[in-house]
Image (tube, rainbow, N blue to C red):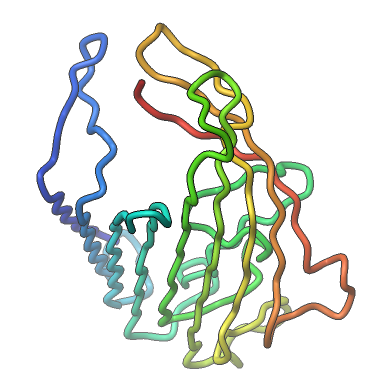
Length: 224
């Protein structure tokens, strides 16, 4: 497989930190396009295919209400492929590693779903600090709402493998208190720690109620 990626960042700002160039976080649109081509009969390759993935990241502030951040994520494959080459749902639920993973589904199991085309929307809304406090304890209320839908062209090609498909919308919502505690690093940036809960609802709600909940810790990074 060969891959080609293209990224566009509007009004990009770069900081030189300890001799390393770092792109500063930005609310401006960021567009990513990834194209992959499967090479049949090259190094014993068995499949010729085209795979596309597109993401758009953007944030905006609504005065008096807070900051909204979203990612639109689209994917498409033009051929029926083995399990390992398909899109696998972006699930991050693992009770042994209970941390929030940005732009992943917090209640979806890894590899729970298979798709050869999908559309996902990840949204967060930060209502701001609970208290007018800029110290080490400055909790912020953040609301999550995530959705995904997808298709798998030839599901019967995959035998003896447990998976689901997303012809109906996968939905989850969550609420976090982030930056419950902030740790300064070299007086230049900070690490924040938080906690939150997520709930899976709708068409893909699981039979056992407790399996629809995910309680996770959050890590935040920011410049001072």
